[in-house]
Length: 389
Ligand code: SF4
Image (cartoon, protein in one colour):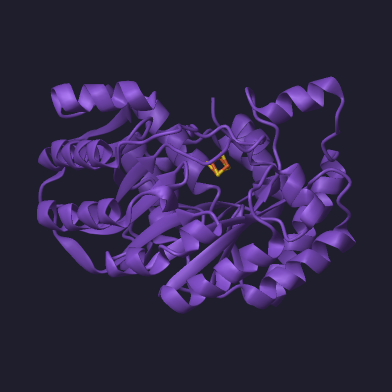
């Protein structure tokens, strides 16, 4: 069984910039607010850690580079271009390489778009989050809807491709309000949009606010209604739900994220970055030190700040691959299940559990792939718990 080229996982480079202007109350990412940042030190350290990982992966062709965070649009454009150039020096790079930078739509960041473009960035992903003024305040954002839409237009005229994010299932949000907001967003969207359901993560300000009773999260039924409205509205506009929270026109999917979901290899550099590397018959999980200043000191001392570098056990490889792959509408090729688990499909997946989930309408199996149905993707955690031990 073989995969077509377009469904082969790529090889990506992820670069984490851990700083933001302020901390959003819903955010559990590795992001920090600092008065001063020594950009020269950070540039040198990120370049050094990249060179460290290039030794393990020499000759692999890079299909995507992703600047995530934090807020990488706060990086100096010289740092971004130096890192892109260093990728080109260290690895062969595919001719249609996708180079994405996440950005927040404040004016200071928009002003840097041209310089990012000149440095090689060809795609931006903007954190718009809402087009409703009161909800932007609730989400602790530092921009208003007009600024966000101006940033989207600037992105459209500067980069080959762009995407933006919205967060839905906000307190008291009705399907009708969400449809109206989506329609407005779709007037500005091009080939890709990410729509995330608001979740309350441990350790966030929102967790405390919910505990205090400041607001209540939407109940599951209403959230499911909003998800269905989302899939229907986006589908009618030609953007398919290729992943639970991501919608794209054909060919406009995020190649970098597809590498994660297809369980491909990626190098992760910067504080707290994770990586997955196939080395021999092992799939090696890597993780960098999380705290920014300690990461910087370690890289300056040792050339890298690796905290974990362990082969993923076979059973865990199967679980990780299913957790990622079943998020995708295309599902998981049976060949990949067999390769990652080193077992036949029937050995890797318990037939009784599988049948129960297929009969329930949550999974679908054909000759060469296993996929979650829309209903299965909507409750994927429960489906995975019922599928894997
Ligand atoms: S800007 Fe993004 S990464 Fe930074 S705190 Fe807000 S949500 Fe988190």
